[in-house]
Length: 206
Image 1: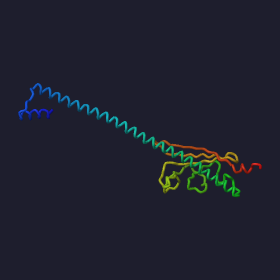
Image 2 (image 1 turned 90 degrees about the vertical axis):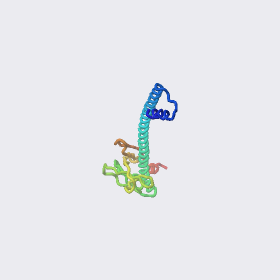
Image 3 (image 1 turned 120 degrees about the vertical axis):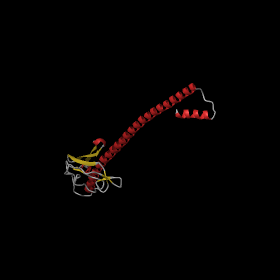
Image 4 (image 1 turned 90 degrees about the horizontal axis):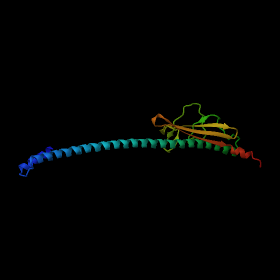
C-alpha cells in the first residue's frame, strides 16, 4: 500500500497523468486485498507443509525402528542356529574319537539338564553353567559373535541347554535374547535332536 501511494506521488511530480481520486481509492483497496490474500495463502501453504513434514518425520522414525527390529531378529535367529551347530560339532568330534578307537560315550562332556555358553572360538566343550547370569556376546573384527570382551559389546546373550532322551538321543535347545526398543526383550529359540548313529550302526547285525 505504501509503495502504491509513493508511486502515485512520483508520477505526479514527473507530470504523468494520475487517475481520479475514486479510481485511486479503488486501486489502493484492490492492492491491499491482493496483498492480504497472498499472505493468507502463504500461511496456509506453510501450515500444510509443516503438517506434511511432521508426518514424514514420524514415518521415517518408525521405518528406522522397524529396520533395527528386523535386523536384530535376523541376528538372533542366526545366533540361535549357530548355537545348535556348535553343539553338533562337539558331538561329531566325539564320534570321530570313537571311530578312532577311543572308548568314550558319544555324549562325552555333556551333562544332562545343564546349559552351556559356547562360541566359535571353543575347541572343546566348555564347562556347564552353574549361574543364571548370562554373559554378553561381543561382535569382533571377523564379523563374528564371541565372548571375547576385547571386541564390541552387544545386547545379545545365548544359552544352549542339553537334555538326554534315552541312551541314543539328545535334545538341544539354543535360546538367544537381546534388548529391543521400548525396554522389551527379544528372543529366538531353536531346537534340534542328535542321535547316536555310530552306536546304532555298530549294533546292527551283519
